[in-house]
Image 1 (cartoon, rainbow, N blue to C red):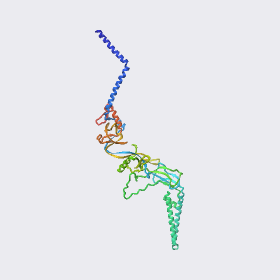
Image 2: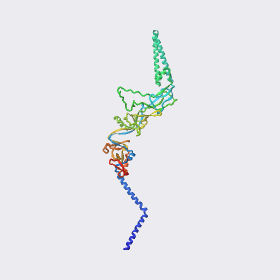
Image 3: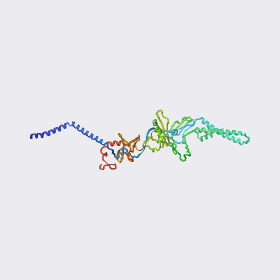
Image 4: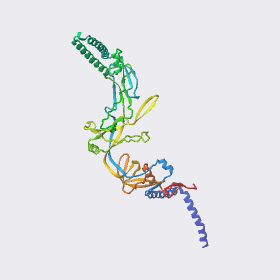
Amino acid sequence: MRILKALRVLVVPAVLVAISAAAFVSRDRWLPLLKNGEATTSSNAQAVRIETDESVSKIILTDQAIDNLSLSTRPIRPQTYWKSIQVPGMVVDQPGRSDLGIITPVTGVVTRINFFPGETVKPGQELFTIRLLSELLHVTQSELFKSTQDIALAKATRERLAAAGAAIPQARIIEVDSQIKRLEIAVKSARRELLNRGLVPAQIDEAAAGTFVNQITVNAPAPPEKSISLSTAPQAIQTAGEPDASSPQLFELQDLNVDVGHQVQAGQTLCTLANHQVLAIEGRAFRDETLMLERSVEQGWPVEVDFQEKAGADWPAIEQTFRIRHISNTIDPANRTFGFRIPLKNESRSVVLEGNTQMLWRFRPGQRVRIMVPVEKLDDVFVLPADAVTRDLAEAFVFTQNVNTFERRPVRIVAEDRRHTVLANDGSLLPGSFVVQSAADQLNRMTKSQSGDGLPEGYHIHADGSLHKNEDE
C-alpha cells in the first residue's frame, strides 16, 4: 500500500506535467478555435443589441451635433394645402411691351452712336446721329422754303391790290387768295413730310427760314401718356401685370445692328431697346391636362410659380398673385402641347459701374420655371418640407425636439410634392409641436444605430430634456 501511494504521488504530477507540455506544444491548433468561439459569441451579442436598439425612438444630441446638422425647428399649425400638378414653363417677353425696335426714318450715314449694348437709356435720350443722304428730304426742305417765301410774296401782293380799291377787279384779288391757299397747303404737306422723316418742329422751322438740316438725331421714345377716364378718377385701377406709373421707365440697349460709317436705308432697324418690367410666364401642358387648367381658370384659383431661386438671393419675397390669363386654343404638332400665359411684373435694381448705369432684372426672358396648377384643396393638414419626413419601409416619421432630445413620431402622409410633404392631422402630432424641418433621414439612421441609453459619453440629461456635461469630466 505504501508503495502504491508513493507511485500515485509521483505519477499524477507527472501526468499533469505531460498534459501541460502537450497543450503548450499544440497551442497553434486549439488557440484559434478558442478565439473563433469568442468572436462568435461577441457577434451574437452585438446582433441582439442592434435588434433591441431598433425599438429606440429617442436620440440625444450635443449642441455641437445640432449645429453640424444645421437643424432648425418650427411649431406646426393646421393649414390649407392645394394638391397640384407640375407644369414646365419659361419667362418670356410680353409681345409689344418688352422689346422695341428703333428704326431710321431717313436714308443716311451713321456718324455717331451714343449708347452700346448693356447700357441704360432714358426716354427721349439721343441714340444715333445720321447724316442725310435722302434726295427727297433735301427736295422737301427746298419746296418748304420756296412755298414759305411765295406765301409772303402773295400776301404782300394781295395787300397792294386791296389798297388800290375799286381800280382793281375783284377777280384779281380772288385769284391771289386762291394762290395763297394752294401755297399754304403745300407748306403744310411739306412740314408733315419732314415731321414723318424724323425732324422736330424746331428743325422744320429752320428749314422754312432757309437753314436746311443736313443731319438728324434718333431718340429713344418718350413714355406713353396714360389717360384716366372719369369713371376711374381720382383713383386709377392697375391690373395684374401692368407697370407702376410712379416708377421711371428705363430701357436697356439690347442689340445694336449698325456701326459708325454704315449707310442705312429708311425703315432699317438701328437697335433694339428692352424694358423687362412687364413680362409673362408661358407654360406648356399636354392635352389630358386641359380640364385641370380650365377648372383652375373658371374657379379663379391662383397658381404657384417656382422660379428656382437660391435661398441666399438678395431679392425680397414675391408678393404677386399669379393667375392664368390666357389658354391657347391650338396644339403644337411637334411636341403635342398647348401653351398658356400668366402675367409677370418684374423687379429691378440699378448698378453704377464707371459712371454707367446698368439695370439688373430679377426675372429674365428664357428663365426656366415650374408652375404648380392647383387641382384639389386639402384643409386642416400639416405642411412640412420634404426633408422633415423620413421613411422606413411602410412607416413615415418626423422628429420633435425638446432641447437636446429628439423623439421620433410616426405620421401619415396624405400628399407630397418635390418640396413639401403633407401630413394628416389625426392626433399623431399636436398643433404647436416643434418639429425638425430637415435632416430627418440622418436622425433616423442615428436613432436606429445608437446603443445603450443614447447619452454621449461624459454627459447627463436633465428632466427638461437638456444635455449637460458631467462636472468631473
